[in-house]
Length: 237
Image 1: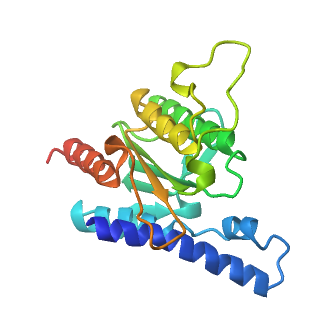
Image 2: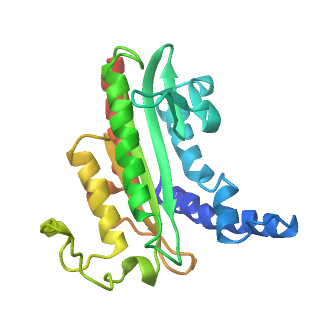
């Protein structure tokens, strides 16, 4: 996969959102607008298909072993099931599960805590299910991809300092932007081994501005390298 292919897939995110909004407006749907773009689904399909192609063309997995959307549902430990975005199986063994999430403006304060709790909770639940032997005997690979709109609201410093009842973690001092908070979230998800790899992308709506990956440890190429190494190691290649 080339950087150009990755950037095209990221750009497709915005194109799909705009198409979904326009469709819902034309159909007179009540949630048309920003909510309509989200509830329409499929806005991460182009990135999802990069993963599918990697499995089929690089790792030689049959398309029938890859499950998407509602078919990508796995048993949990703290809840009956959890729906991932991409699930790959080899018989009764889970090979990989991948979650795609995004956050766009104009209000970046909304949903930040929810996104954080979702990322942590999904991994903890699935890791526990793995430990209980619900997903096969071998250790599967878990991945997390996060796309954040590159805008003033996401990259500027926060308007106020945090003032909890106890001292805040030093990493969050200095009124970090939402972009920095999400980057740190992805880094710590890896440090705590909740996920095997994470990718963090800043994607502007303006096509004249570049798509960026501000952390070398959180690039999509590193993400695919980790996935490839795991699959080949587990298959004995």
